[in-house]
Image (cartoon, rainbow, N blue to C red):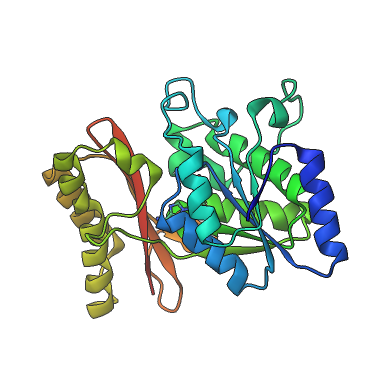
Length: 284
Ligand code: AMP
């Protein structure tokens, strides 16, 4: 039976007891409305040595801009709880806003380089909200291992950097993207898509897969050509491209050319209807 904990001191107490009992604690931070992508992170925590797993479910207000979907973000705690039970999660940490932010914060955690690119351009406060809440979750759950999804590759890179710069004693795992059978990267926000938008949004994953295949066949190809083709395919499907960018896979900082022997990630953000989707693929 997964234990549901709402308060930070109670979670800290649980984690200290788990450590005392010799357990390795894993943390999977989420905003809930769980899907197989989230659940794969629980398995990744276990595969990386966690014998007690905490999943946090918290729709974090400070990472949403004023015109974003905080209020309408999908929530279904009972469904999430059943999925966590089925996956043998030890603790579901489900704080209220009043537990996480009993008063407005005057201290924030801010990454100032990686977070300026890609999603940071259209979501200026987003990553500061993420690094701040993840720091709070780390201090609440006191994990040895924490797992993030490659689906949010820029977020994962920022967290890796934060942990390195600020010496959090936590091993960060980045787990692969889980996709629908049709290729669309799983996301709680896919629920917003109409059937027609979902079908058209497949241009995102199909164009990325095509780029990956093209690169494997012609490693000398210009990055600009791969990017132009992805843009064209998404636009032809009626998507509004926000960015298609070549980045270094580790840092997620912009890369100019596809140098041999290095790993690159092409990251995409595009809107179908009013729904903003992100996805990425690795080359090399
Ligand atoms: P979210 O609830 O959207 O904030 O996501 C919580 C965690 O799940 C983040 O580390 C995401 O990167 C990860 N995640 C979301 N979707 C997927 C997916 N399709 N595959 C793998 N991880 C995912």
